[in-house]
Length: 462
Ligand SMILES: *Cc1c(COP(=O)(O)O)cnc(C)c1O
Image 1 (cartoon, rainbow, N blue to C red):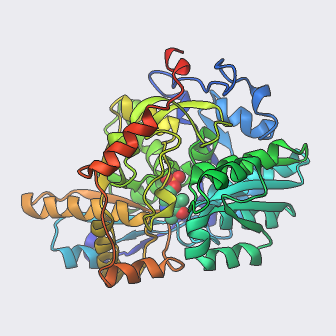
Image 2: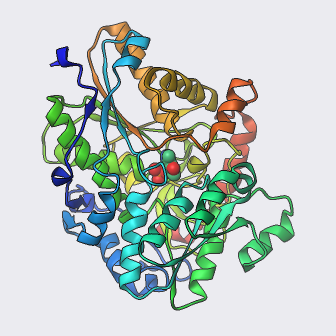
């Protein structure tokens, strides 16, 4: 098929999928239930109504295989969707690999990443439920930008706590959030009980996603017309992201290809789940399916080194306990540049399918990731988000294995976003200033084992 060298595999707006795929309907064994943080009993829909609208709570627990995307959401999606699938001819040539490499590019969205795919329906369902304001946390700023954009589409307020390290190091995201109408604070802040508690113990804390979540949840719980929105981890977020994989399957079919391996980066697991689950559906239905491989940071290796156990989603212990691969809810990841991957846990759904052996995982160092990002940018002209470079690094490793073995694998990369607002990280890499923290470092292993010792013990018997 390759004599035409078709680089972009596009779908018309009319070909855009109109349903999300819910993997809960097809899993051979059900994932463990969420447990109430205080009682340890399985969470009921009522327990979640202070934070989320009923439509999202229903999606969180739904047994339906496909869920229709509301027309109002499709209308916003069409601002940038369907997103392009590219054949990376120039990268292949540069690498001298017989592999055929494709990448699904989510950087075309208003926020420059996949995150609006869930921010938009979350804002929509909350607006429908009469909610005035959404609160949230943001690490690198991608999710905050996405939610601020989504709230602006539905005429809602948006208040954001951003991990302080990123707030200070990445001012452009903050400016973008404010431009889109959001309000933003560095976390830990003195606006919440949780923030003040951390500041009292660690005045110099650079923050973490776990702390920022606690602050945003606290504000939402304090008001009836304020809800909280989470950018990853939860079932409904991964559900919304399946638009990525659904489009990719249609695009590969258009190109006359079938994937041998699909690779995505994992922070909380939403872009990877969104890409991988529609492919997994085919495998669970007994058909041939590609290898699905998650790439995570070596400094925050929840899948490859974490424990599969009940843990809180946040450092204060407000959120339900979820059974997931975790490094412990008060693990403080090293301030790597891929801020979106600095989360102590992993989506319960991703954790479950990993535990069941349905997906694979690898951990990547910062230096390998930025080297891959630079290689990719020079070949393909897109500077990838630091998070996305984890997927690219693994794809390059796979392409190199193909070069050795002569295998012509079809490699599909989930390119979750661009790195235009992360250029200082590239500069640090180019100037040789990046350090690597891996599982070989005793310090990292010790800090993980300390935080794992604080897992909620009673929940483990549930
Ligand atoms: C937030 C983010 C991630 C990590 O989040 P997931 O939920 O694991 O997808 C990855 N890539 C980009 C560009 C991000 O903004």
